[in-house]
Length: 140
Image (cartoon, rainbow, N blue to C red):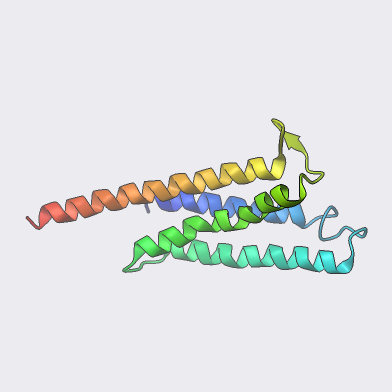
């Protein structure tokens, strides 16, 4: 078990947890003021995120000859998920989301989670570089 696997897993699990916490309640999925079609799309988005989150966790922890691709794709999962929140903010403006430090809570939380994922990814690159250098040195 490597630190990068744990760090990226934390970002993926935080993304999944935040999605369920924010959407599976009476402000979104169970909001009777929303049209049924909007609630349908909220559920679809929630479970699509869950699906590729589970795939990301599998990629992080599986043994593979190409760990670089597995870890890179897994580390991108939180970015793919949170990207839509940022696009909605820039295209239609802020929602009625709570503000923290003057920023919408979902964007602040998403930014922190993406930062954690980036740290995990760069830690993986560091671990890989150390491993490659050690392997190269042993072949001399």
